[in-house]
Image 1: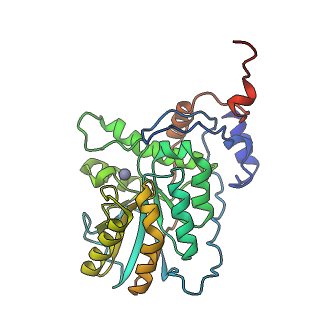
Image 2: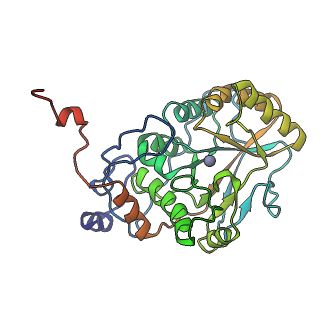
Image 3: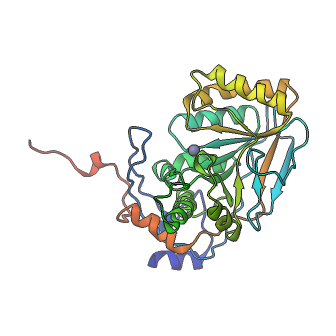
Length: 319
Ligand SMILES: [Zn+2]
């Protein structure tokens, strides 16, 4: 924290040349999908200058799906998107789609989704889980570096409608999600785009997000990829619903293997069907709150400047 203040005042934080202030001794990944503890340092940020996000790479595929349109979202007051829950903002034209991916970043599947999007020169919004971002900050950095929009999906994917959670605990789930993603991106704040776990919207948290100027994303059509028995089911679900709705914000999960496997074919089908992908960008990044930035670092345990693997630090010399 002490180190950080000086560095932040001294200059901008570079994503690629991650400063000591945001250095990350990589946490060890959990074996299963369940969130686990992580280890790493970091300080709370001040109002630091944010570097510009890298643009998507130039497209070398003449038959790519591409990006039809890019829209910038002013999140003042916490607008809601996705007709499953919010009816006011009907901004998509016929045949326009927004691709969204929840629950990452995750080993294997998120990189596969990134590869599929890159091959088709297209993009999406990644609603990442804070804890997962602390497990795989390098994967989340790849998402950001590829020019995709990074939003959040709570700290640990708790259902915020759960009455056992106090109001403070609900806020903490939201805020630590943003702070963790900022930590994982080396101090770069994500978009003020948020999706509730299981699309369950407690009214008081919808109000809170409005006060925090964070946009809320439901969806227009759910791929139900988490229930799909194989990739083809994901493709069929999305295409059938799009044909019915004509357009929409599509909910998928970069966390899931079937989705990652389905995506190359799904993107080809979208192109063949005449659909156009719309990129959604935030007008300004989220303003994280210092106490939650600190809380994330505390959760990540003791700061250390060493990122050497345990095998290089601890050697069994007799047994
Ligand atoms: Zn989720």
